Each structure stands twice: as C-alpha cells, then as structure tokens.
Image 1 (cartoon, rainbow, N blue to C red):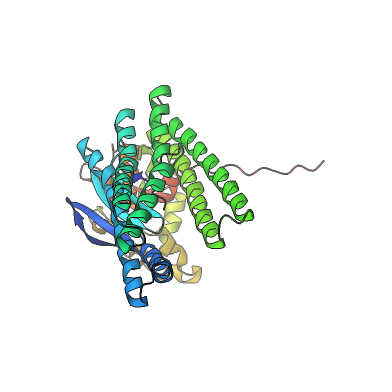
Image 2 (image 1 turned 60 degrees about the vertical axis):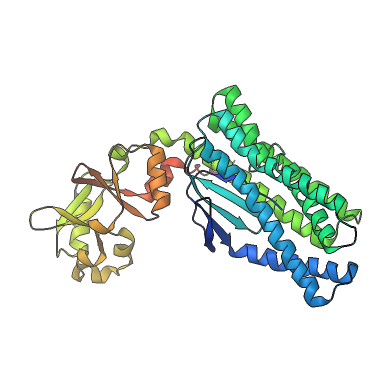
Length: 388
C-alpha cells in the first residue's frame, strides 16, 4: 500500500467524505478506499476460509476485521505526519484515506529543511513501530490462529510500507527527506524538489522493470503485477506533479495583481452585448475586462466572457450585457498586494474563472484564471517544421 505523504496545497477531495475527527484533525475517506476494502475483505476472507478452515460468514468477517486494522495502520501513519507538523506550527487541513494509502494536507510548506525531514520521516517511523509491535504479537500468539495470522499480516504490511516509503524519491516520504537534504545543501527548495522528483521517476522505472521480471519468473501473480504497476503509475504521476509544482512555485514572484489583472471597461446597465463589445474593442488597452456600471458609474457586475461568447452573434444586438454578467458581490475578491503564493491559494480555495481585484474599496480590475495559468505555466512554442 502506497502512502504519498503530505501535500501543502489545498486539494479538492473528489469523491471523499468526512467521516470524523481525530485530535481535531478531519478524516476523509475516498470512495476508492471502499473498493480496496471490499477487495481485501474478499481476498483475506478466502484465505481464512481455505487455510484456517473458517466457515464463510466468519471468514469474511475476519477479512473485514483485517481491513479495519489495515486502515488503522494507514491512519496512524498519517497522524505521524500530521502531529509532527503541528508540533512545528504547521496547520493540518485534514487526512484523506484512498485506494493506495493516504495523504495529509497541510496549510503551508515546512519552514526549514530540518522540519521538512522530520515531518516526512514521522510517518514511516510510526509504520516501523507498528510493524515491530505486530511482529512481537505474531511471535507470541499461536500459529494457524486468526489472531496470529492477522498479527503476521499487519507486521508484514507495516514493515513493507515503512521500507517502501523511505525510498529516496518524490512523492514518497523518503523523497521528501531527500528534498530536505538537497534543500539544505543547495539552498533552493524548488530545485531540490525537481531533483527529488526525478529520483522518484527513476524509482518508478526500476520498480516497474523489477515487477515485470518477477512476473516472468512466475514469482508474482497477475493480480500482484497489476496492483504494483498501479502503484508505479501513481509514483510516476506524483513525481510529475511535484516537478510541475516546483516550476510554478519558482514563478510566484512574477505574480503582480496590479499588472496581471485586466483593467475594466464599464458600460451602462442595459447596454447590448454587441454595443458593449464594440465600445470595448475601440478602447485602450487591448486586454481588458468588460463590466457593468450603475447610474453613478460604480462597477456593479463583471461580464462573463464565456457566457457572452455563447450568445449567437445575430442575437447580441438585442441581448443586454446584464444577462451575461455576475454581480461583483458574488465574485471572489483579491486585493492588490497579495503575494503569488497567496493568489494561488485563493484560486485553489475558491475555484473560478474570474476574480475581482480591489485596491481599498475600489474595483481596479478582473483577474482571469487563464492569465494566471499562462504566467505560471507558459506554453512552450510549437516547433516549426522547415522544408528543405
């Protein structure tokens, strides 16, 4: 089971529901975790029925009990990250359990390489302790019993999780520890993240080659092969996300709302879409936002460009801009002076296409999320083919 450690950016938990709180930390369970729980229950129940001689209802009940113990181990692993983070003043937004393990969401990055390493390694340390305790229980308990077998399986799973997660490559916990070491060495957290992410992709490739070899040698079953390849794919994707985030973070200082926000061109309420667009096109600058003003000239709404474009051209002279505009009071607001990181966090916390930008009490422009995305992740120019 793969634990992908900590995330420090607000994440949208698709398909996840809060199931409770532990020490004040919200616990979420993703729908994919239910699939894993069902699969493990069936597989372990079949093992209990076949090798331990249990009746089917009791065998699957034992399988469900093993799932609960397994989830408890994953939760304790994540609590290791979360409580260590809180110990160093980093807020924890929640813990999510999903198909391949779990992750802890924090409200900011670790302030120093030392704290980053401690938070990262706290989870594997918890898993290693759990593995040691379960190993002791497996030695003491009689063999070929339900309790003894569950203890043995928990010992194996926790030790494997601990060892696997300390491999030095993002998004694994060991990759975060590697990043912390590189960060301390080169004094550049973003560059350290990229290097640790490349190490993670290397680990994914080596793991993929290894499991394919084991499958060809008939050491792994087809199910085991597919499951580990899913883990490999997840590692590859996670490493790529870490690289992307590091490159974006490096560009945060370029975010300046006073220049990035498009100035507003306001038209009176009741103006047709066609007339409003004609006036806006004739005005300077070229990149601007279209707004609606009341009789006193105060901006009261911002036109949704997508909604305006969806109106057929032949109807635009007869449709008012008010019908495709959103009230300023209903749009997310950002103030001039926010840092790049604060802007990105605001966008992630309140996803949308447009944001009103203010200076004091005045509306000074509109931020299009597409403009922000283009600044943080500029598109690479396409290579032009040249005929010879």
